[in-house]
Image (cartoon, rainbow, N blue to C red; front, top):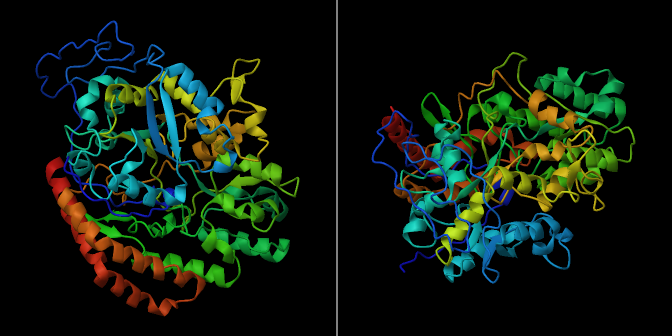
Length: 579
């Protein structure tokens, strides 16, 4: 086999998942019944004596060959006991893996019992995945299943297939009715083009979310707001936030009222959407790209970015922002500040909050969700509010896999109704059960976890982890307990934005060509390094705002302008093809 040499690609996992670059530019069109029907779809059947319960030939398709609904598998999928798939992945809380190993935890063991598919988990620390992947690639030693391969592979999905590193799932589409159904289920071109790289290429299984919602945003200490007579739903503008923070500090003696992350934001627009930008700075990806009047425009370099940074620099100078923010890579890192009353304005995923409240030194501690902040109350947000059907996980099947049909079937199982439910909720009696009213409720092991993990993190350990795995996650699972509706409503009500225009959202259907990706890869590293080394300095004052224009000029000259030109070409081609 002719193979490309891999390059080391060090990527911070969670941050890179939000990056806007590195996708490619091959446009496809969602087939509908009005398109040309073509020939009759052939009926393909499997050997009735096969030890495998494949779906092929056992479901209905429409005139375009797409399944007409979800498929329920007969279990087990395999009765071959000595067949093993290796699966390269990670665990964000490895300290809680038992001595018997990841594969012997209740969910993983029951998954093996149900499907008959034996998985040997290769757990790699999240911070060293890029380096480890490069070693596997260079030695032609990829595991059968690889999580998030394209976050680490140095080329395009097309080249990864052509160079025989990974399997083109399109060639096995008849074995994956549930994933194929997702492509047309929503009548959404972005969903279709996420699943299909082009008309005859499906690179991997991407994790999906049932009932997508805004999953993370700022919350404030609700009990403190009560003391100050502030209605959390009235904290809508930057002026409102500033008043709240200063009153926390001056009237309640809060040491550091506000927390941020080392990337400023983990999800685009948590604090910056009101400035029509995304303040997310990583050492692994270009700034977020947005579409302004038909022009691809990188954030972190525009006048609106200056305004947002000027505001944060003012807050920092007034000691409203915790100076340790530069080392905060996740909310978990901020646990001491959150639980001891050092801070009162923190970005949360709602599934984390109950555990933080329970662990607080103040028995009255309560965290309330605040609306997405704006310049003015009636401002229509243009970026940072789009909810996606996809999460960040994915699974690719390597060319080293000796039984691709079974590997495909195994992955497709997690998109079936039964497979999605089991993957989402885990083992009945361990992580969930029915109450007297017949409602699903999480167990005490989840909501009062002995290791102190929040419900969301427990479910990631004891069920599907949509940050790395494939399948459809029913993310409402993390709120299936008495009182959980409060946290679910943070996403469904408080953070929901029916007026959101999405005017600046970059089309997720757009993909760069191989040539454009190669050109971008050749220049983006220097740009990323330059921005990462300079941008954050404007907030803590180590670089004066008077040098902003020089910073922008330097970013443009070092390659940001060329990167924008590549995206402009890609966007123009995209518009021409979809007109």
